[in-house]
Amino acid sequence: MFGYITPTKSNLGKEDIEKYRSYYCGLCHELKLKYGKSGTMNLSYDMVFLSLLLTDLYNEKEEEGKEKCAVRPIKEHRFISGTYIRYAADMQILLSYHSALDQVKDEEKGRKTAERLGTFMPGIRERYPRQCGCLEKGLAILSGKEEQGFDSAPEMALIFGDSIKEIFTPFEDDFFSPLLRSLGSNLGRFIYLMDAWEDRKQDTKKGLYNPLKDIADKSTVENMLLNAASDAGAVFEKLPLDDNLAILRNIIYSGIWRRYHKDGKN
Image 1 (cartoon, rainbow, N blue to C red):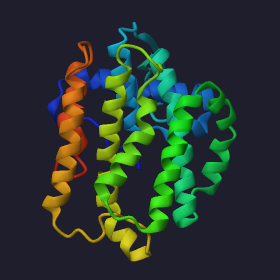
Image 2: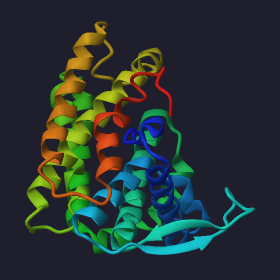
Image 3: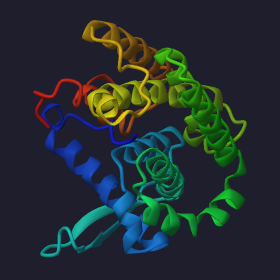
Image 4: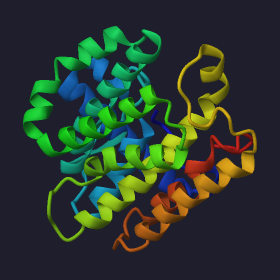
């Protein structure tokens, strides 16, 4: 259900592309460092966005490093690390674990991934009880609604958005927490709807739950997506960002739509 919060690289300058890549490599580096080589298999663009956002918002000085890796083995490349990249790595494992559980429930896939990531969950729950509790409570509500055949896509999207809002909020109660919760909730709504729209035909064929399976009019879904995206954009503009602003705006206003407009270029 993740990987939608990506940049449109064709609309970014070379310097910003390199910066984004350095954050991407930084998150990959951190996942490998904390969770081993298999941790890097869970890397998603969504948590790169969160790394860029929080590092900029809280004005943390970027820590730079260089390394070779399995993907880029010839020449050393730059990566960025720091407090919020480490936080995003932990949140990536949390999200990937629950995504794997969802696959097991729906299609009996992902069992090995869930078991592997499950070994890290006691530590993550201990460090982040607020984020884990919010996510697990929200996903349980979603699961119950699915079993009932509840078919209101906007309401289901809102439940999912509320379930991930604490992941966007590293501190329980600071000045930016309300805005970050709202941003996370609205982006979560968008992600849920995009995922349902992409999977509707396959889910219908397999007999799986999908709140959009009976909606044939693409404009109806597009209006739902626009509503979630515009709400996310309105909150985003209230955050005092500067260093990574061009990249983040690119993602918020263009990148999240790339998989909807499949003819878009990266």
